[in-house]
Picture 1 (tube, rainbow, N blue to C red):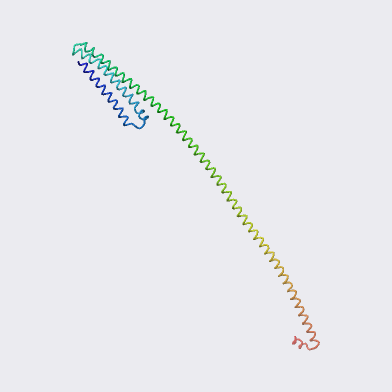
Picture 2 (spheres, rainbow, N blue to C red):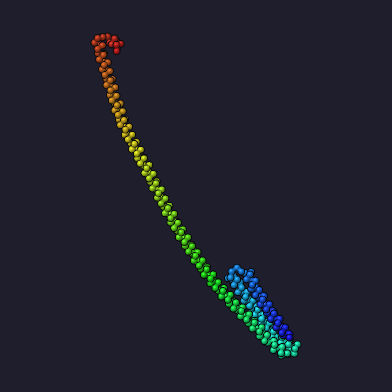
Length: 242
């Protein structure tokens, strides 16, 4: 009777542990529901630890189940073989349940391991794809920058050529105006030189005329003096007449 009570208590404790284990899993899912990869990465080590702990506790209960009830049955019931015979099938059922739970946990851990491996593979693929996309974007940006730089350089060269052509045209216009001005100035100088030559010649001509007039005046004076000498022998009278 005591052995049956022990088996029932152990079975009830086992069910309670399983329920607590399931409740802990649900609670972890609620508290760590960011991504599936984060959840599996968080739970693998925890599940391994709980599995080892449950195996350890199960081993201790098995020892307690097979040792203590047997010893107690000898002291209390005087080695009641019927009670021991009733105890062993239930112990086997309990061990079978423990093995099922262990197998279930192993399958779950294996499933989580495969899922984690798959997630790591997918994450690695996503990272590689992201790297390729970033590299393509960087290459496109570099090509765009090179193209814009080339276009800017061409525009700058064209603008420089345009400014040089405009400056050369301006210099040519200024040179043409300067040549025209120089030509006009030379023509004016040439005209002034001709005018100066004419004025100089006129001045020479006036001087010659003036000399001739003076000569004529002198001759006229001498002629008058001669005439007065003929008609007025007195020199003083001649000077007064002159």
